[in-house]
Amino acid sequence: MIQELNERSREIFRHIVETYVATGVPVGSRMLSKRLDHRLSPASIRNVMADLEESGLLYAPHTSAGRLPTQAGLRMFVDGLMEFGALSQDERENIEGRCAANGRGVQDVLQEATGILSGLSQCAGLVVAPKQDVALRQVEFVNLGGGRALVVLVTEGGAVENRVIDLPLDLPPQALQQAANYLSARLRGRTMVEAKAAIGLELADRKAELDELTTRVVEAGLAIWSGDNGAKSTLIVRGQARLLQDVSAAGDLERIRQLFEELEQQQELLDIIDLTQGGEGVRIFIGSENKLFSLAGCSMIVAPFQNSRQQVVGAIGVIGPTRLNYARIVPMVDFTAQVVGKLIG
Image (cartoon, one colour):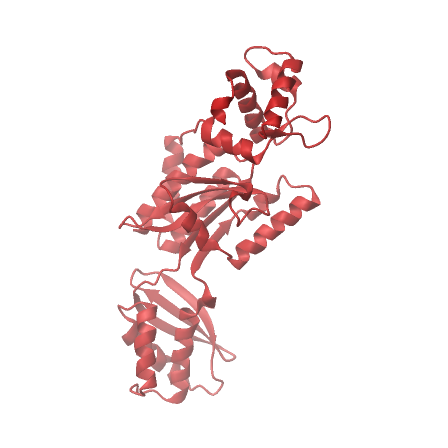
């Protein structure tokens, strides 16, 4: 459709979209006549705006208002008229330095990268990646009293995760240490899936020299990790409150609330990764183009990140209103995805 617009229509349309992205308010003909390099009368501009509206690229939110771009208009602008910006050297070094400084493990890298994107874009930052089944080193139990214990799992890479489990009330003090020794000897060098399968067979065949109570602790320690509430992916969202900054209408608030619920429930999150598989680099989804966020009327800019074997293992990006500063955020998301991929290995 962009080829069907003459130069004057393109220029007017570009100014409308850029003003909308900057201000979020409808753009009128009088405002445009003052901004255009070659002066056109408000009447001439209104004629062009009427043609753009008839083409489905603009709409009027109410009578006598200026015009706003439609979803189709934003898509055409992003695909055909937008000029992407470039990150400064300082911005690149800031992203690299902050990710690396907090990169003691994959989770740290993802947390920091999401926070950086949220802060720089003034939107909500999001990262999603499949659960990683990494090799393990050891497990420890810490008695918390009251029939509860803290399970500490250490991976071969040095990452530490904690969970709390319930204990049999009649558990003798030595049972926790016995369970930790037993698990550590069999977890070392194995993933959780591998360890659970091997230990499960051993327990079933009663080959382990464990009493009944210690066996229950071992099984509880395995279950708290291998189950993981059925989640297949890791989701980190930072800066959700930024989505509410420009929201005033009750209907908009309800749509944002629905978005939060969908994120918290992790519905269709792996679809975000699948969406990035179709092509290289950054993908832009405006409004209903992405079914996960269509009800909230949000846009998403997302890029895949790869491991050292060039396999897509996750996606990182931002969620915000449809009037995102696409030209600035796209290179930001792209560079951050590259940094994350290098750091997670």
